[in-house]
Image (tube, rainbow, N blue to C red; front, side, top):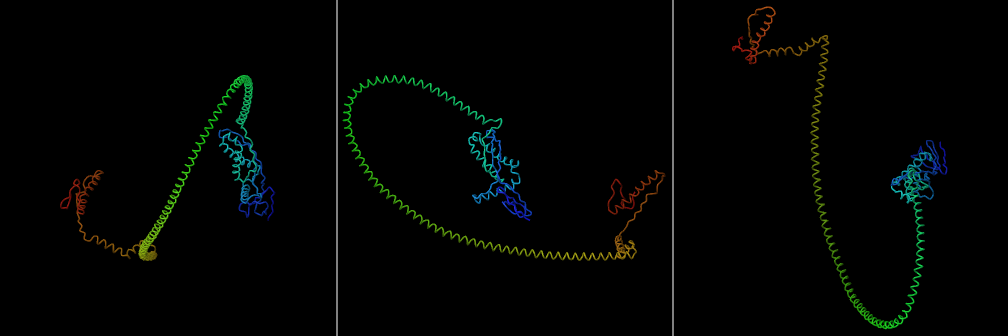
Length: 493
């Protein structure tokens, strides 16, 4: 009926079936009849890729990468929210990835497709120089975006190692870049060597020139010093006399400057004292003006608040009065509208009642007429049925002779007497006129020609009495080209 299943330390149990709505994850559980249990490993797997990408300058390159990917696992240091997220990712992994072998081509192609897609999208937005200089940032962004896409499959990147960029065969960008660096270093070395040689040659010449210049300078300075010492002796004597005179003049100037400085300081002190007095007086006036202004402001505020209170009270009273008036008017109009509505409702009800009464009367009259028609139809049906039975019995009595039965019905219904009466009424009051026409003998002639002529003559003999009869009965005359009738109507030619 049940079996107890325990998973290894790196495994989980995925249980489905009876009593489980979706998928149940556990480390150990009882598996009952109608349930399926599958073990799946959460050990991460290494995936090695060489991603072909292209920068924004249309320069292709290869990005070798090694990703350690697997489902997440819980640990005691995680919070409740983190554990719930881990369980949700494990559930996705159990549904989507666990049924497959983690080392299968399907899983490998899935992970490779995600990594290649994100890497190509990012590389297409950057130049080759930006990718090369910001390799660390580029790797981090690739890691974050790949992790975001793998999250929907319940996979987590435990470790990633993105190696240095490699040239695509036929596009040796990095090789040329290295050669450029090497050639730059070699050229710089040659420039440095030439610079050092130039400095050595120039320094040598500069030393020789400086030696000669210094020797000539020393000779000139020796001559100048000898002349200068002689002049200095004379100058010292004149200088002593001049210094004595200057000292005396300076002393007198210092005395005059001291007196002038003293007078200026006294004037400054007097000015400061007067300025201080004026400032003190003005400060007092200014303070008085400020206080006066504050008093006036307070008075204005008090007056404003007082006016506001008065206006507010008046507005409140006016508002309450208008509200009461509006409410009274609204109430009166509402009552009038309700009364009008009530009257219209009652009138409509009365009209409806009258219409219902008329409809009921019409319906009763129609029912009466229908009942009368039904009774009349029933009577006709009964009469027809009786006549049919009577006709059947009479026909049987006459031995099935329909002519005899017809004659009997006509005699029984008085048909012959009625026909005689109608015929008598039709000929009563008639005054017939009898015209006798004679057109001679039958004529002479024999044979086939004589018979044809007799037929034509017979037609012409028939026309005069026919036209005379039509004239007598209708008053119409034949056309002139056919002939004329006698005025006494006794004969015709």
